[in-house]
Length: 157
Image 1: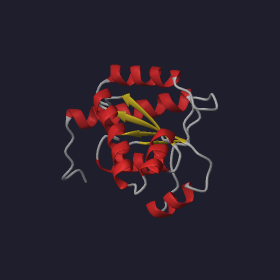
Image 2: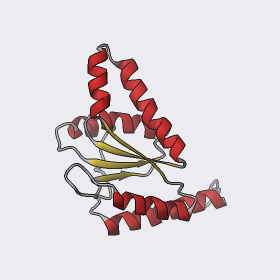
Image 3: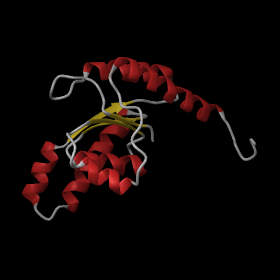
């Protein structure tokens, strides 16, 4: 039943680009394609007990993507902020740092936390195949603290 489903050029292109990005990331690194199905709070609590991970979040400049990026960064994970423009990604990183500073009761603790979080702002417009290609090539140049360039999780927001 296709009633109520509206498919326009942008949504089709975005969905196709997300699939292409998945394929490129899976072939260029060892990615865990899906997170276990569980309540968000349970996953969030469980993730604090695990080794720190490298996580890519698309659409991380607002809403749920921004909130998830902030929470994961505060848990010590390295978060790649993939946004339509580099300016939006940089603003997202600054917003996360501002939120941490505003939420902290201790200025010195906030400064230390902000210095230690690992945010990597990057441009990736899923409606533009050239942008995706550049994004993947730029990703291959980034490495984690242990010298790898693989991801533990990818969140298509």
